[in-house]
Length: 212
Image (spheres, one colour):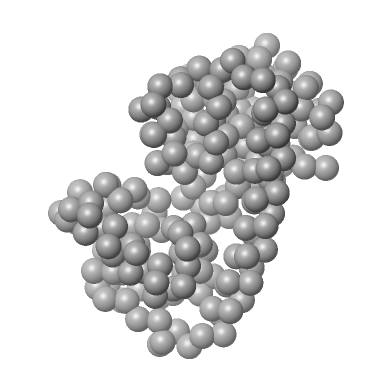
């Protein structure tokens, strides 16, 4: 039975949605704020997270920023279910690592379809990562060489910085950062940032440079 972490500060909404998800065969852990959600993610070990954006104290944006810094939660499907449906809102969500952005109101069957597809993709991706990291663990660390600049960028990637944030931090253009990221992906034979982080953490790569 798949587990869903539902983060919603409106108790009536979380109750109705939770009941529906349970009827569809899911186990649901409800957190009415981000603080409880951070506790629940360790306790409940969800296969997927659904969260609202606008909440008291910490927002859904704050939540995803926090959990995406932990490599254990980098691949968990993250679904924003919110009334904030403007294009700019969706862009912010996707840039932070959101997988799906579903605006209220929504059709319940569409939500279930999205959840099932997202979880299956998550399971397939984890298998790929296991194979990928196993392959890299057989490589001599000395064969994986990064320049000082690449190490600086990689360090910020591991901290969850976006390309724009890295560019500002290192006083480079976003285009240059994109080129460096592409080079890092090629060197590590990974397909995206998430795979890159998994591989580097799996290798326990030792950085030589001193970072900001």
